[in-house]
Length: 276
Image 1 (cartoon, rainbow, N blue to C red):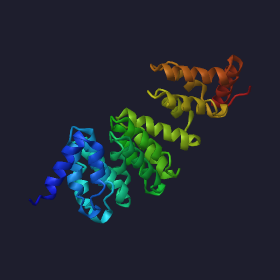
Image 2: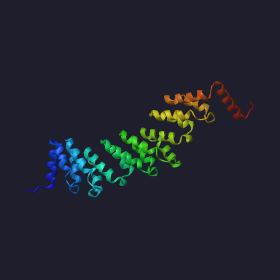
Image 3: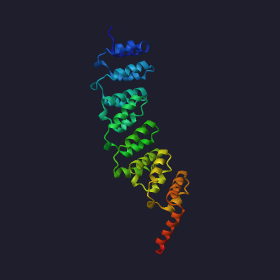
Image 4: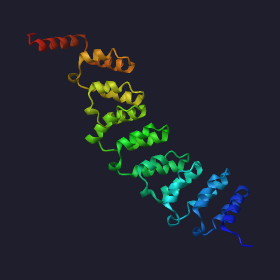
């Protein structure tokens, strides 16, 4: 009695649930050119882990010429996460050069650790000049911590050019708190010398502790001649605890009572052009 390949796959799937070693031994004998990646991806829908593992192992043996890139892209949008994971693995293994960093960041959401590792590895190989800080910062709006961490890593690789600085300044006004925090962190790490003390104090109200620490550290390095005593006094009345604290720390560090008096005296002398 002649049987079809589909019947063979069905039998293989059933055998994997009752005798996995035998199923695997037989599966490894199937000529690779007879393997169908679409059917093996379908194996991932099984509730049985042995069936899923068997399907994955066989699918990863299939050479690139037997795969269809467009079909795989279509498959990876399916609801079933195990089907997504295997499809993403196949895409990254065989079609890495056709995947942009935005797609790889999406793949980094995978529930499969191996898929995440591969997605990160490929994303980090993308030349820095191909990365866009605005696109990367937008990914911070994601609720997925894996996405946020990878986009932050990629953003740190972008060359510190003036247009990058200007774009980060724009993003620093974002309504999204995570976008703001990353923009501030990048500004502090890549463009600290271009930030004045008022901006640094403003950054100190960030909800992100690392950003606050960076802002404070940089603010304490600002030379006294670049500080404004009256402005610091004004900032000490801020509603934000972190801003008040840093402003006071800067005032006490650079303007003790005697220095403050001398500073105010100089302002009066300069303002009215009078002698000391």
